[in-house]
Length: 231
Image 1 (cartoon, rainbow, N blue to C red):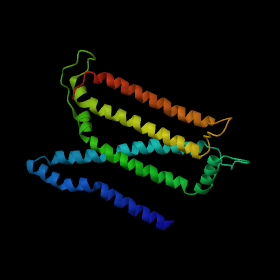
Image 2 (cartoon, one colour):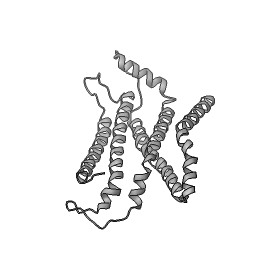
Image 3 (cartoon, helix red, strand yellow):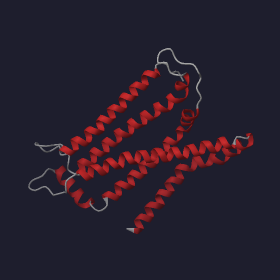
Image 4 (cartoon, rainbow, N blue to C red):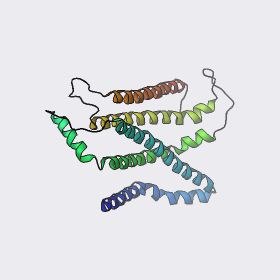
């Protein structure tokens, strides 16, 4: 087991190095250019913004995904192998649960960390919109429709639009994976004629679906402001 962990860590490190190769290749040249024109502080501000964006979005996605998977497995009753004749699907799920009991928890944690890493890496590219959002100044001019300062459309709206889309996509992804976990745990059974969805599955997925609808409503609200926005 220890050897497998070491191999996994080495593979993860190699993967990180490959993904960061393009970024590292431009890091030093960008630093030299900023240093030449006397804007080294701006360079480091961009870098640190990218770093904390990576950790914030990766952590947020990790919490969303892992907490729901943990809750799905926590709510599932203790596993008991079905008795009597069962369908091929139920037989496959039964074998999976019997064999995966030892490593499934660690596997889910590792996969969640890896996915969160990629999510954080992609979100770090929003550093410019984030800096505009947090450091902009008011223009003193408001639009005639919604009475919002023009700076909202220039500096705040792009990041809000990105974050709303990111949150919706993340929640849909979490909903799908959570449903898969419930299915693998036997709480969703499409072959059953009596109860295909266990009560706790209906409650869990319904709450996630309701949150998704609320986020979509927020996106519609932002789209309303977008009618006046022209990049």
